[in-house]
Image (cartoon, rainbow, N blue to C red; front, side, top):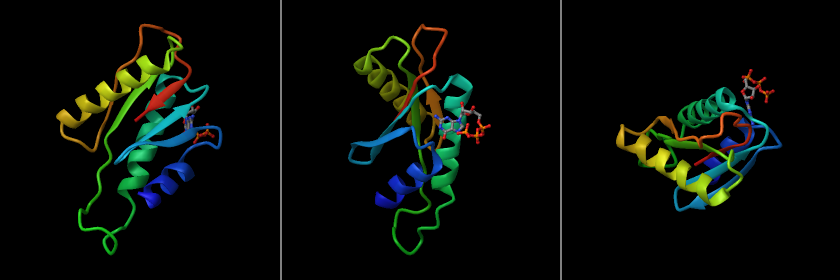
Length: 115
Ligand SMILES: Nc1nc2c(ncn2[C@@H]2O[C@H](COP(=O)(O)OP(=O)(O)OP(=O)(O)O)[C@@H](O)[C@H]2O)c(=O)[nH]1
């Protein structure tokens, strides 16, 4: 998991906050990032992790990354986590190695959350 964490950290801006949110899950908070930007970041992370060559390190290869995206439009972190988690679940249902999103009703999304 450490190499994944380092890869994510090296892929995003220094102002983005990455943390471990579960056994095989990370959460990222992306300040001042709009909806197209959020999808750009999620794809960057997905691609960077897919490009890792870990054949010598892990059995469960190739790796896939599934990402749920939400926003902090309603300034409620608990709700944002719930939305991102639901988006993650939807993405996994659709076949993994993909990005899905669930946004609040706020049109002016400018702070994002990824899981
Ligand atoms: N928070 C965040 N947003 C990003 C990042 N990379 C891209 N974006 C968003 O996606 C938009 C367009 O992406 P790019 O043109 O590929 O951005 P970039 O110049 O490679 O990345 P930046 O220099 O971080 O803006 C940017 O304006 C941001 O909103 C990132 O690492 N972190």
